[in-house]
Length: 279
Image 1 (spheres, helix red, strand yellow):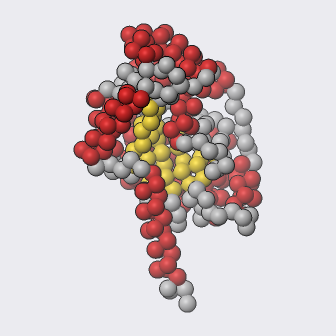
Image 2 (cartoon, one colour; image 1 turned 180 degrees about the horizontal axis):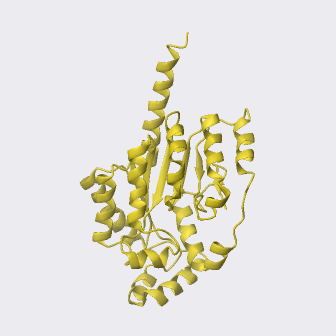
Image 3 (cartoon, helix red, strand yellow; image 1 turned 30 degrees about the vertical axis):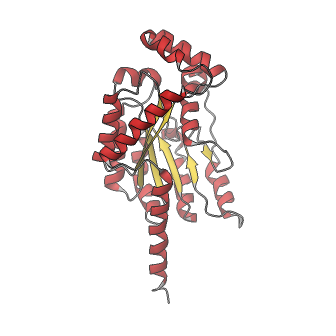
């Protein structure tokens, strides 16, 4: 299923990715086997972007369901979506965990030459065992870093690394966090954003059951951090203190707004300069 979320949905990126992983863990059969195809998505998108009321707003693609999941090989919806964005010169953020995106590098680069486009890749753990358990049926973290590398090398698009959700006692080790930021700096990633795991409603019980079955050694400690839906305040404070230090050590941006503002400024300046020669 190709899912496009415009600003109508008031969800932060952190909440979207946490929701996504919880859906996979709690309802794996539903998530992987029941797929709904929005085959007319490019047509509907074109209609929306053609409206006089549309103000060239940023569009987030693939935040809930990966637009480059395996069935995209058959339906090839994304090339039409990208061509529509190019037609309207509309900025966008595409989130994925799949290297199928390499197929569309030329279109991504074409859009990156006329407006802001960011390719975001989620990487939660560099431990293969952990990564396969919390993100089944996805490519390895190593291959995902390769996505960021190729995007930076072959396009003018921005790149974001989504290090979220950070799971206490599982993906929050110094080694894992250090490697995330070190690789982000090495690949010249434009931004890395992080978010701790929060557990609300029934998902709390389902997730804790998953932890008890797969990682019983951390169950009691993790359970004590979630007396309500939000992770323990002291833990959260300590976590983001560490993230702040890694940001300083590796000089990596952790605020998407700064990246977007800077890029948009560049595109606007280029547009003004080119208009001087249009007479």
